[in-house]
Image 1 (tube, rainbow over the protein chains, first blue to last red):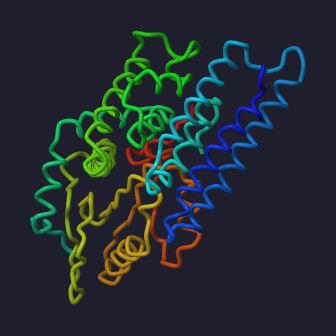
Image 2 (cartoon, rainbow over the protein chains, first blue to last red; image 1 turned 60 degrees about the horizontal axis):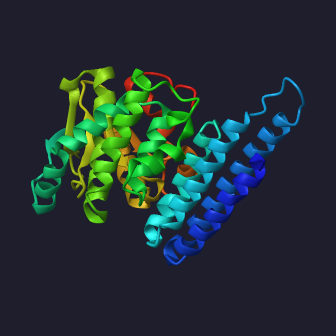
Image 3 (cartoon, chains in turn purple, red; image 1 turned 90 degrees about the vertical axis):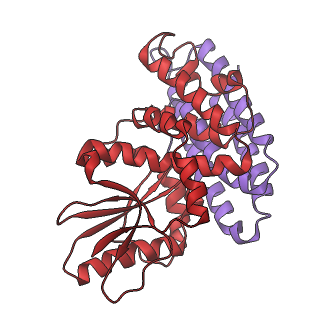
Length: 111
Length: 231
């Protein structure tokens, strides 16, 4: 079964693809990369905490196989949705939206 | 300091039609009572490309998955209704949907404010005039006009809408009001995460210390309620 950090890296990869699209808006280059920096850090931090909790052994807050399967489907669908974006302005919108939706799927506060 | 209806130019007439669309009121009413996760669902769908409901249900397992509230429960029904309204907004097409999204943020703001100050004190599309000061070009989206303590709201769908012009207009209004011995609270409402707004604001040099920022996670404060724990 794939663990949470590996699933989150799929979203990070989708964010990188959105950045490549969004940074073509020259005036927003810095904003686009700043968004990538802060949201990628937030997602990876959440993934690390969840992975640590899941590996804490019996009685830990490890998600069930069914929960993990739903999470994997959710994050793959979110990444696929991001990949549908072809307009650079929409890509910038998604650079903020995708991490929030990912955090909701992970059961975390979306910010 | 005095308030005045904005002139109805061509843009305003077109936009008034969007604001009056029943879909705007329907979405705003749902989002005013939504959970943080449901608000993120609305943001994603209204920003998204997929036009069918099922992919979105799969993307939000905490709202529609095996551990979500049961089908037929009020919470599940609200999630379904928000998904349905959001898809209807997305279906309006790229140009029109951006107008709808802005109008929805304004309507949610009005709806939540009404719970705190009552609907009679709230106005839309108003200018604020000060003696000896040229009027701003852009009216305020929402104002609270109560004796002794007025509030002016600029509403944005996303953090990217935050600009130096917006920040200057809000701060100028506050400063001009103070110059007349009046109190005016400027508020920027953004239907986006504070994290993204802070990224946007970090490189702005325009004044913002006197402007309150309300983001998607703190919308309920407009109604005088503390933000609920996110889910």
